[in-house]
Image 1 (cartoon, one colour):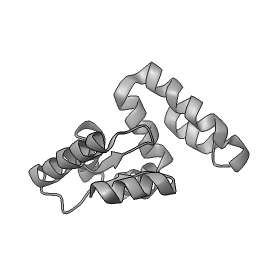
Image 2: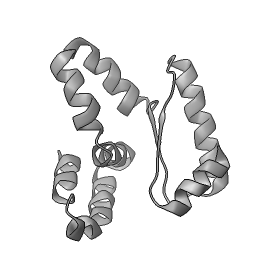
Image 3: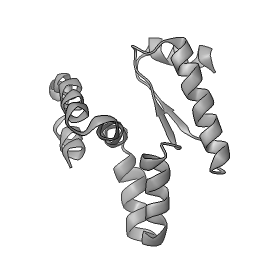
Length: 123
């Protein structure tokens, strides 16, 4: 719930400066899982994926939620502080997870031109 509140409060440009602090607060309080949920919420996964699956296919919801949150198999989030070797190791790990769960793809998320160039180099 804190992640959803954070996203709703920070959709306006003037509030985006607070986003980093909100994410840090969530990470401090809820750990790695909280940070992942905050990233998923910011990236729109709840509205685009989870809520429609929950509303239309509630039996499949838990499986998808586990792939997304518990197993972290569908997404990879990067940030400017990551080294190329860390990004490459994460990419290899995500490819392994995708193969293990029979997924045709996973999503890589980053922001900023420099970060995007770094991801392309690592790929």
